[in-house]
Image (cartoon, rainbow over all chains, first blue to last red; front, side):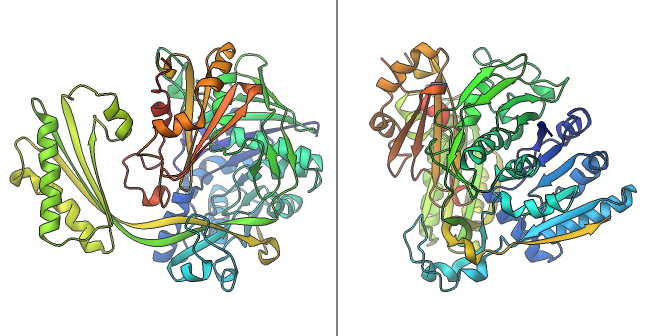
Length: 446
Length: 100
């Protein structure tokens, strides 16, 4: 194959199925990648698996497979991290759906081995964020996943799987694996692996490179956002690429949309660490190569990191929160009075919290001190939000209840009360030697 | 003049860290951004939001600056008390820097 056509049909777990279906139908793809797993979604997947051990794969898997599996039967290979906390469960579910759709003779693969919780015992490492020795933190760690690389997916591609499901694979590796497979790139061809990683990074957030997460009316206008298309890269065997999108869709692929995505969630652009390579985007070039087509070049790479990054979910208490709106004259003053009342009432009851945050939505909720420094005019409407971290669920519930109680025991005109309580799973990181991580391919034929 | 007049930006999160990349609309304004948007200035601008250090990286081939803001969301997105748990809107906070 001289050029591989690879598309991204999901940039996050909740991404739009309609856009994925259009991509699958019209993209003429060799590979369709669905990136559906973030730090937060992995935490949610574990919560589901705890309730039912057969679950824990992405909650939207069934809907995606029902829509996209018929495309796989026509020659497109689907690669995804939809396996989340349970790739084998995802395999079983996919085979069942394929059967229901009458799609027979299709090989499906699932890769696991990223769950490394049991391997952390006795490992002499620290928790990156806190500096705490890993051994001391182990008791509170709910789950731990190593970020696997493209090498974990290659056996499935070589085995001819039309659907490859995994859990915690580094996002760009989902794209790099098909390129390595098609072009025969060696696992130590750092230059090409870096280039392929750059292409993967541009695509991994779906429509974030085709005009999504970009528009600002009057300044950065994007046509047809309603029907925004998903991205497609045409990649050659040197890792040079043209990024475009599903034909006949809205959105925009421009040098500007690609620039913003190029550095999205990047720290040092010369050293973007993945399990596969230390990718170097610091000399990247982007050039308009036609309508909604951008040529991508200049990427490179260096030797991969020695160890694999591990992401860990740590049980970390609860968050209780409540909201209430105030409107018209004195809205902000009434909201401020409410905030004082809630804090006082929590203190009087001895409700313990490690942190409490008061926000006035419409005034300073999001930009905090930056918003206040700008001395914005008093808002016509403001929504009070109070959120607190607590050790117990009971204390968290009191925070929300006290905000709701403002309805008749607070200032005038409080409206639209709402409250919630949730368990906190903090996400922490460490690293693990590669030798301690063994991946396994499970396959089934529909 | 606010930075917003001449540049666009995007924020992303990874664990406790926010990064904001910023690009001038016109490439000829890139040297001005390199000169004006020092890591120290960005750190001062985000005082009260960033609890750690701020690093700046330059990518001249795309006229981009990338700022890494450490400790904006202790515990990561799941543990954040902020309405904007991801810190997505901090890009527009950066664009409020007054270039004079």
